[in-house]
Image 1 (spheres, rainbow over the protein chains, first blue to last red):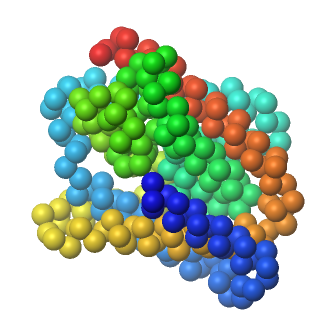
Image 2 (spheres, rainbow over the protein chains, first blue to last red; image 1 turned 90 degrees about the vertical axis):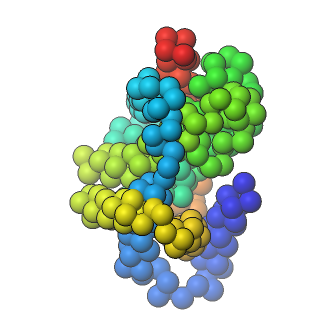
Image 3 (cartoon, helix red, strand yellow; image 1 turned 45 degrees about the vertical axis):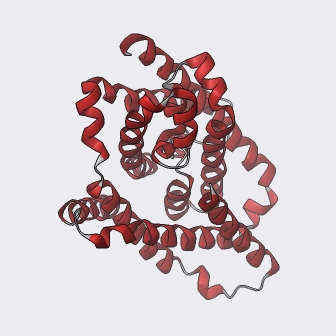
Length: 200
Length: 86
């Protein structure tokens, strides 16, 4: 949580500096951002490669754990597809790329900004922050009406870090392994789906 | 697209090979620093982009609708999987 606020704080500082015109144009050079982005993706890869959680859930629950990231992905894309009909100004692929952030707002907004510009990048940032907060705030309600897997699906890529405490508390400690597994799979899929939809 | 894949794949390979080394505990911090830098850059480009600044309300509304759609869709699918398999 603390880290999320620090991220948002830096984003807001950037906005304010740019609005006030203090910031020199050199820093807006996209080349720097591209290289930092590649470094970021490399570190994301390292965390996935070094992770120990991937097989623990498979061992405990068997192959049915794969159904959960599948449900998250299929459900998100179906929901976004339907909602995109209400947003005539945006193409379906742009909407899907925002949905494919799966609450991983930092990575998805950065990727989308790189390929589509700051406007859609801002949509992705806000949409995916809201998704993370929906679990933090509505977690107990989700469990009550949609079952114990629902905060995991709603949490998307964040179920291995920021939303894990909420999931543990309201779905129960036996779902921690599933949440970690789910978070890793979705985490890995975010850059793939986002760049896939943007390349269509 | 191909660069993105290569960066992640290289990371996964390095991460897997070095998973038992103590250096690995620093990747989390490096990751955070990269995210902070990039979100700061994103803030700069958002603040200097008139299209974004002038349309912030409609951008926020689109974001909200997409969140509702994506989250609701995943809730229904998760409910079905929970009933069927768990």
